[in-house]
Structure formats: structure tokens, C-alpha cells
Amino acid sequence: MLAEYGPWAVAWCFFALGCGGFIKGALGVGTPLLTVPMMAQVLPPQMAIAIMAIPVVVANLWQFAQTERSSAVVAKFWPTFVAILIGTWVGVKILSVIDEKTLLILVGVAVIAFALLQGSRFRLHLPERMVKPAGLLFGGASGLIGGVSSFFGPMLITYLISIRGLAKNQFVSTISFLYVSAVLPWAVTLYLYGILDDQLLLYSAFATLPVTLGLLVGQRIRGHISEARFQYLIIGILMISGISMLWRAYQ
Image (tube, rainbow, N blue to C red; front, side, top):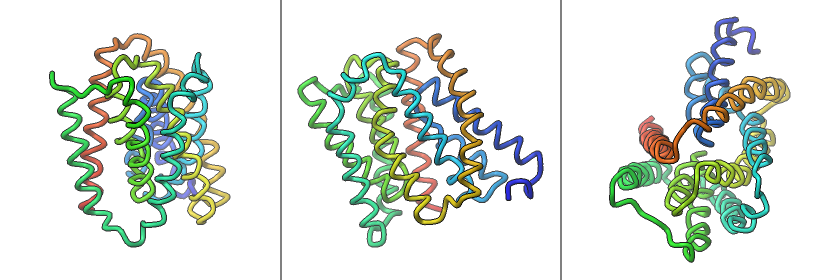
């Protein structure tokens, strides 16, 4: 199936997957946001999305497995993890009746506004006592929006960059843990609904190689990124996410 698109298309997809792995390794986020549009230049969009199923699961499990204090991350953020699962289930259930365009516009505008706020001197900081309650709210919202539109990231990024003192490595390990609760059910759903058929499942497995190579390079680069610059790069990803939601709404 993939061979019919030609060797240049295959090479471009390999490059796109490597780029996605690189940004995931460096920042902990942004893989599908970058990789899917790049691959969709040479492949049908649905095929590009399906190919990402296994790489995103592997990348997030990999990064979380490297966490030095993984038990502390689980203890602090398990309510958010559960809220994402519940929100995703609700989002999928209401997919047929909700106005997706309106939802994407409202959330996209809110995400862009929040990114601008966090990039200013008026940035929001969650006090420690509000981290878990806010996690329930943002986790549920992430699952709900993701279940409807597949955009799980913006609400989680918004939540985590609001936590005072969350260092870049803590951010990466935490968001990888939280993403697992979104991408595993998502990948299973793609397979059950036949979007990820046996042949695409094989391509998706092979796609893990360039993503992993990019991930390893990105992790090395992260060590040379200052905490302040990391925060601004994440805010940039958040802005792109908001713009992507608005673009999707008007397609």
C-alpha cells in the first residue's frame, strides 16, 4: 500500500517521523501535531493518523519509563490520569451530537489566550493545594475534547505549565504519563473501528524506528535547553495547538 506512493513519499514520511520523535524527545509534546500534517502532504490524512498509533504509545511509555521518580509522578497525578480516561469515554459518546466546530473554536481561542497570558508577566500559577483538584478539571476537559476531536494535548499543556516549579524533565515525564491514558485507548479504538488495519499496523510498527531515533537525539538536545527557554518553547507549542484547532474547525 505504502509503496504505491513512491520512494520519495516513503523517505519524506521517514523524515517526518524522525522530526516528530525529535520534538517529543526535546519537549515531551508535539509529535502528532508536527508529524501528521507533514505525512499528510504525501499520504491520505486518515492513513497518516493511523501510522502514528504505535509510535505515540511507544514514545510516551519510553519517556515515562525513564522517569527517576515515577512513583511520585503517579501518586501526584493519578487523579488527572483517571479524569482523562473518563473524559475520553464521555467525549466519544457525545461525538455524534456535539457541534465539533463550535467546541474547537471556543477551546482554540481559549488556548491561544492562555498561551499569550503565560508568555507575559501576568502568567497563572497554581498553588500546591490546587494541583490535584485542577488536574481533575483539566484532565476531564482534555479527555472530553480529545474524545471529540483527537486534540488531547492543549488542556494538559495548559495545566502543567501552570504548576509552579515544575522543571522541564518533570514536565516531560508527567505529560508522558498522562498521555498514556489518552493514546492507548485511542490506538485501540483505531484498530477496533478498522482504521488501523493489519497492513497499517505493520507500517505503524516500522514507524516506531525513526520516531525512536528522533526521540534519542531530542533527549540529548533537551539537556542543553535552559528552563526558561523550555517554558517559552512549550508556550509556542501551545499556540500552535490553538491555531491548529481553529484551522481544523474551518476545514
